[in-house]
Image (cartoon, rainbow, N blue to C red):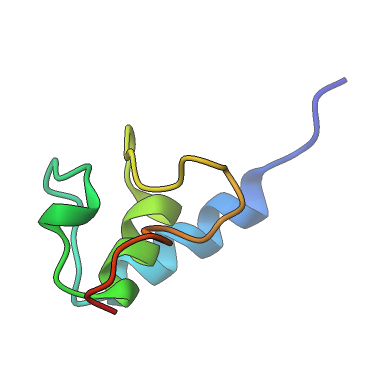
Amino acid sequence: MLPDYTEPLNRARAVAATSSFRCDGRQHCSQMTSREEAEFFIRNCPDTKMDGDRDGIPCENDTRW
């Protein structure tokens, strides 16, 4: 039996709906304007490439933030 992901998905959708950020196809740290934006993208947008070690922290080597 698979776990029920309904509640976490609904919470993520609610955050996405109230956020000033939106998924627009960007995938890389160089395309982000802040750490908060990168965090939104890795949590809510498909196919991002900003968390190479998969620890939930995007753009760890980006010196801009």
